[in-house]
Length: 371
Ligand SMILES: [Zn+2]
Ligand SMILES: [Zn+2]
Image (cartoon, protein in one colour):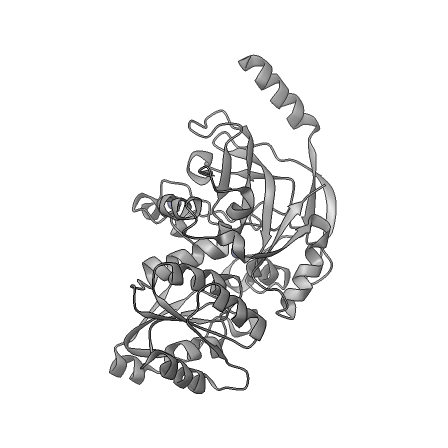
C-alpha cells in the first residue's frame, strides 16, 4: 500500500501540469498558462488549491508598488497568497502533515528556526518566504509550501476552503491588528479607516468582541457592508480633510477612538487615523503605501507627546494564533466567508484587479474555479 502510494505520487509528479494565472507584464492582463507543478522540497508539500483570494497586495505587486521595500516580482509571476486547499503530496521529511489534510497557508511562510520564530513571531521570520513573490502562489491549481509541518495549518471541521481563503491574509491580519497590536477591549471604540478587505474584517472581528466600531470610507456601499458586519457608526469621508474626519469620529465616539486602524495605507488615512484618537489612543498601521510615497508620512510629534498616542505596526498573524482564530471561525463567532462577495474563475482575475484600481470591489473576491 505504501509503495503503491509512493509510485503513484512519483508518476503523477512527472506528468503533472496545472493552470496558473500569471503576471507577464505589470498592469497588463493576467495570462492563464499551463505550467509544471513544482515538486515539494524534502520538508515541503504540494497543496491542491480549492479557493484562492485576490488581495490588494496582489494588486500592489501587479502595479510594481513594493519593489522599494525589496519585494521584487520576477516576471512571469504567479501571485496569490490566500489559500484553502487539500494536501496532495508531502516531502520525505514531513512528519505531521499528511496527504488529504485540509489546510490553509499563512502568506508569511516561516522557517521555524530563526530567533523571531523561536520567540513565537513567525509572522516576522528572518527568512520569511512569501508565496506568489519568491515562488509560485495560489492563483493556480496547486501551490507548493515550504516547512510544511509548520506552514500547513490544518483546518478544523467547520472551516471550509472558502473560509480558509477568506481568512488567508486580510482577515488574519485584521485579527492580529485588532486583538494583539490594537488590544481593543470590550466597550472601547475602534475607528477603522478604509473599509476594503482588511477594514471590513476588522469591523467584524472588533464587533464580535463587543468593541464599538466607527467605520470610515468614501463609498456608501462599503459603509453599508460595515454596518451589516456590526459597525455602530459610519462616516463618509468624501470631501473631508483628515482633521474633519477626526472631528466626526470624536463626535460619533464621545471624544475619540481608543484605537484607530489604517486599513488602506495612504498619507490621508494615516492622518485621519491619528486625528480620530482620544488621549492615550493607539494607531495601528496595516495598509501598505503606494510606491511613489515610499511609505513616508509626516507625524505631528507635538500632538504625539501631548496626547500620549502610540503608533504601532501590524503584519500578518503568528502561526500559534491560528488555533484560536480557527476555533472562533469553526464555531461561527467569526465569519470571514460573509465577506466573500464574489466567487470567480482563474481567468477572471484581471477583471477583479481592474475593479480594485477603481476601488470597485467590496469585501473579498475569491477564485474557486480553476479548470
Ligand atoms: Zn524564522
Ligand atoms: Zn493579502
